[in-house]
Length: 168
Image (cartoon, rainbow, N blue to C red; front, side):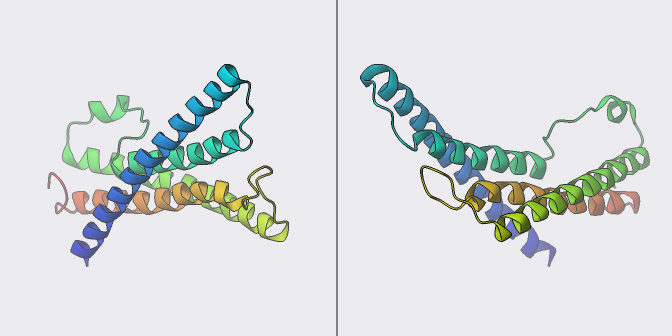
């Protein structure tokens, strides 16, 4: 089962990397095109700004998900760098993962409430006419994966405490 989950996580990481690459290109191309059209040709490209913002939402949240997956999100490691024992580091990791799981769980709840509200009052992105949930879906991606990766980190810390994890 662990091998399957690890393989699934690897596929998920490759999809996220591709999504980050594609959305980076879309955001860059859209903004260059938008600025060039407006400044150089006095042409307003209707919907281009919305398209770039939609791609940017996916870029930011996919990037945040990758950072969370790789344990590279913003951290304050002043305390962690001072911990020398394996057990102390594992306890520290467990506490951090538990706090992250709670906060990410609240984020999931907020995203769910936002989606539920949007289902009752469906809206569209004004110029493009796309459903608003396309811009909200990246938030759900980041929220759900943050909880899942926090649970993964909790399991790793518990295994480390039991002497069977990383460094054990």
